[in-house]
Length: 365
Image (tube, rainbow, N blue to C red; front, side, top):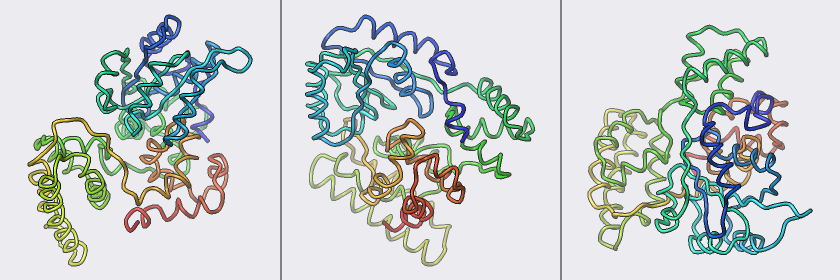
């Protein structure tokens, strides 16, 4: 499996973000109680991997979070304790923007006897302005196209994968600076399959302008989006996080109900010309009344089973969180019949069946 074979074993082997890695190392050496570090940047840029490799190189015992509030309480207790074999501890909170128990996070940072590092796409999505203001922020960037091209050509040479320069450029463009995505695409190419990604934005990127009232960017992103059923359920799940009172919530659901009527007609009649009106309900309806604060978007309840049964194993193999693993499900599904690939991810037969039915499951819940 290319992802495992070409995973960096040290920070020196990581592509890009060398300055950011040095900043993290310096911060760890100079850490003082009550301070925290926030790593932000696009998926696949190496934020979590950098922390895990630095923990190994600087002899820290890494303690990682889960999304369960009780486990976060246990983490709070662990932060006040010493480490096994007298090692230093390093506490890592991945996807900090999805953690609901904000007071526990603030208490953890304030009282911890060990450094606390938070990882998020944006520091402002964490939803704790006071904590963000007091934290050091290190911004990771996606891997630049030229570096990614050289890396993919190197892997092709080592693995005897046939390629041409146009194919490499297409994969680089599709990956958008995400090394994991590029290696997954290359794995498919080694099987004689090339897949371009259906859209250029992930669900978290597209929800922001919709709820923020940024109509120009919302329209631009929606024009490149294909999974409108998914978008519908994500918006429905997060309405009550975005609006203040009953009137605003009722207004939002009113627009969403109109969108649902259009959606059903599109599916029943195959009238795809109505799709522009479906999008208008989001761009001009939902954004009409918005809350002037930053929300943490949560996945629809219909994703819960997938998160637990498959996403956790994908996240462990790709070194991402369960939330981060969701964006790779479509591409990983294409490997469902590859026994060696599935074994490498730790899938059992039930996991493989869940993976195969991912599209149907995600549409129907």
